[in-house]
Length: 421
Image 1 (tube, rainbow, N blue to C red):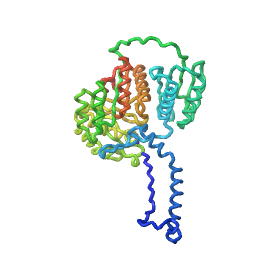
Image 2: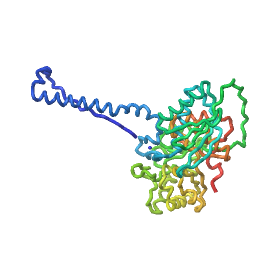
Image 3: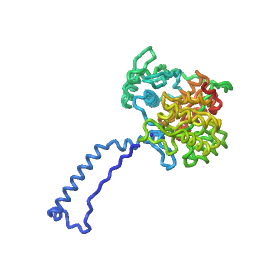
Image 4: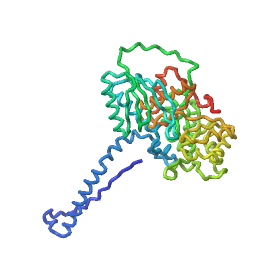
């Protein structure tokens, strides 16, 4: 949002004319060198034992979101948001992935995993999504429950699963109920009924943050022929080119503006970030500079910003140039204590709020499951907003999910949604 372990072995030089090991070690210098070499070897063995999981870290690094790894470009901002401890929503996502992987192992198709309900609940001042699921299992249900428990434990989650009905169980993480799921007995497959596209279907916006560093991925998003919103870093290497691709493909363009996180300065959002303590003139000028760099943008959302968005005075200054230039603000909701809504209302700026983050885990099935959550929210409320990042897995998940949704959800630009009042 990172771990880079490297060991160096300084091996003793071998003389060009080796007189033979027996003659060599009989000399004082030889004895000293031999002692050093032996000590080095022992240290190397200890190091290998200590860092035996280094290869495991490297192996699994690809599963870590790019926003948590950082980017190589000198112009790119640093990771999306610092990870907060005891955030139940993050633990829920880990549990989601564990469930998905166990279902894959049980040869359950992801199309058979039904997300029946999503309820926004609050725990220790932060929101999380309580979910009700239903899926079929061919084998023994109790064996499946045991396997789920073991997988969750392996993922580092303190969990319990309580039976609440003949086919129903309640999963709790850290003693807090997070998932209710029902396991159906496998029956003969019914014929698929063709779904008619509903022009009045609920609306959902998909915003892709961190745009501007990878032109190829931007073009792949544009080629989806879906109304994806491109949110572009003003100081990214290819901001202008990515904006051009987005505009040509008739996709909505936004500014992804870095703001101070709670981990600052250890976690640095970027050289163009808005920081606590900046005066009004500096804040307004940085927003105006960002708008000049991406003139086709019609809105702005925050990159990081868990500390800055909690500061009402700072957010009020952000809204002044947005009001002048008639841009809307999308609150990425990196903190439950965001003051964006109050600041936008005072400045008469159109405000939207994010509902779901898509790709904390770079796994196609997990991302599709997050898309299903966003769709369920849209069906309950009439609309929803999901935020993802330019990963190949995210693009492929969106492509598959959009095709499988059969028109039940309309993917639209953010500006087509009803703003918060």
